[in-house]
Image 1 (tube, each protein chain N blue to C red):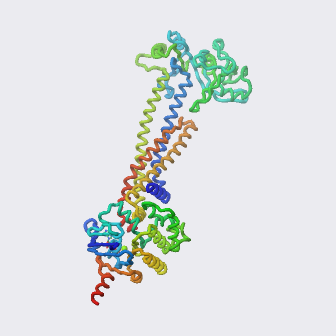
Image 2 (tube, rainbow over the protein chains, first blue to last red):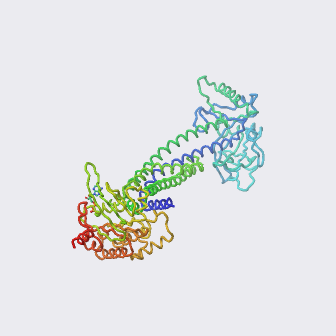
Image 3 (cartoon, chains in turn orange, cyan):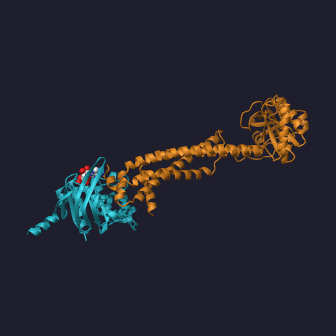
Length: 404
Length: 235
Ligand SMILES: Nc1ncnc2c1ncn2[C@@H]1O[C@H](COP(=O)(O)OP(=O)(O)O)[C@@H](O)[C@H]1O
Ligand SMILES: [Mg+2]
């Protein structure tokens, strides 16, 4: 009961000393804000990457080759123009390779009369549908003859379909990409938004040959997807692919690969590595900022106690034990720390939301920062509150009431 | 048995380099129910003596027995309990908690009481009514006049029904009307059986008490009780 009463007195103390209460929360608030944002970014990037893996339609028996040096799809790369259709044909000749899907991509405006939208336009071969195992909602997928004739035909994902045609039937209608009209021959089945807000249906597919001659005006590929027969064939196949591409691109022994492999494992490995780096940063930043926050609390509390010597003396006169005074000020520091934590989480959530909303960073909110903040703040409050609290408790009652 | 029994109490304050001897061999017994005033010039050691009486500080040497308990042997817990249950303080500078209502100031000692009896609020209200403050229950200390503040502190000192009231110059910050009213309250309390020790340097205030003790430079220089005894012996 006594402990609740001391808690009540602490609340009253914080209410009556609003200015120093507010100042005390600032340090912790900044610490918890950065912690919340970092955790949210960490989870956001991870979710986005995992989404991309699923979106790429990777089975365990397939992998992708992306043109250009570097790692994964995040780093900006050089030498991106060396991969060709001939490479793709050579790869298909490997005995362990079941399918090869060469691809070009470009983000473009697609137009139907007055309606238009920006979407990802891919130049692909008919095998794309097999490799992705993506069903049609209506019409047909691109065929070999479409490829051979460089036909101006397009298969639309659900998102551009909705934006361009509303309720009308799009099959057989013409849409415009740059200066050419394309006939809509098929519609892809809708997959829906992923957890991180990525839209896999936001795409349009045309024959690779058409893309080369009319969209990119270039013959180099942006990526090739390779599907083997069994998952166990992937590592050896990757090695063979590497040799073929290096030879085709006439790379000297010392030169780096001008292409990148992407497999579910390599992505997962990258995710793990980045997660570890992020965690190290998280530990460093939270430690430093919470230490600073704690020192801020301790110092302001010490000043506040000096101003409140009389109050302490009065309480002691009327029966407060040292332990009562200790508890009161300890409660004050813990509550102020938790208050800073709550404010920090609020601010952190707002920033995380903003980063996501304005496409600066993918973020994802989890329960983790809430639990972490609660623990950290309680700890900071206790560790940095105990010294001022004991100092207050050990003031002499006589001298405290004499104080002016 | 005396409520207060002080034998050869000395109190020194140690500061860097030198020591101030404030109380020198004070011997003082006060019976339960007595009304005592302690007089003396400023700096004589009155407040120091009261702090020791009120268990707010320990004497440098000597023995203090309060209500049969040797105070020097008590730890912080027990001292706090003695202050809480047996003593009510009234100060010259009032010492109300700032920013807190009169009612809450009066109930302050109950926060630290071993058990808070039911009807605390009613009791606090009754005490404030008794001192004529029923119309200012929810005013904070800053919103009250000096006389009103002193009445609240008296109500506060009474909330735990203490045996001993220690008042350090209670009229020092009051005008004569409020001073008279405060003394009236003390006079009534004594009639109800409370022991009161009153510190003052005004003779007309001191004369409310039954017994007057004068201290000078840390020593008792006169005690009306002892004089009566000597007078009796002379006669
Ligand atoms: N903490 C202290 N350190 C040194 N001297 C002190 C301290 N407290 C009080 N004194 C001295 O003790 C003397 C008596 O003080 P006090 O008991 O307050 O006198 P009174 O209440 O009779 O005016 C004064 O001379 C004062 O300066
Ligand atoms: Mg004094």
